[in-house]
Image (cartoon, rainbow, N blue to C red):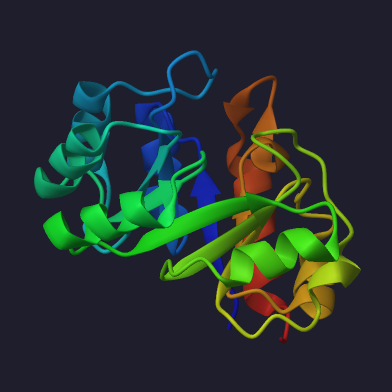
Length: 201
């Protein structure tokens, strides 16, 4: 069954929704200046309120390794998502010092972008249209991928089923598609999760 990640949680209400609806993963965004940014201390507080069975993914963009590792070692996050220009040397050092699974995000425009992504030795890939654009790319480009990947960009309850049937992702990753006026919307989250869990892949 396709898994799902609700990204960009930042409030106690968001955590309450997640605890009830049980997504497979949630995401905390640690990129300052983004509207979904959470500070390390606030993320730690939210993690304490989150159901222990739901892994929290930390989203980073060219973040110093020490900051990433400290959040992992403190238990604030259980997975690491890299959204910048982190090269293989960065990943190697991260793995030497931290055992958390790593997701590496790639912006997909062409088949060449996919080929580049496939060579990156992370545990998972995340294929996206851009950093938080809320728009989808051409999913037909990724029909033949044989590595586990998260599909992101432009997802919402109305197209989640189509995304699963066309792209066969390991997981769908949604943020703005389950929001209203910039805040997580319980009914949209519920509809998205229901759609994913009732779509046969």
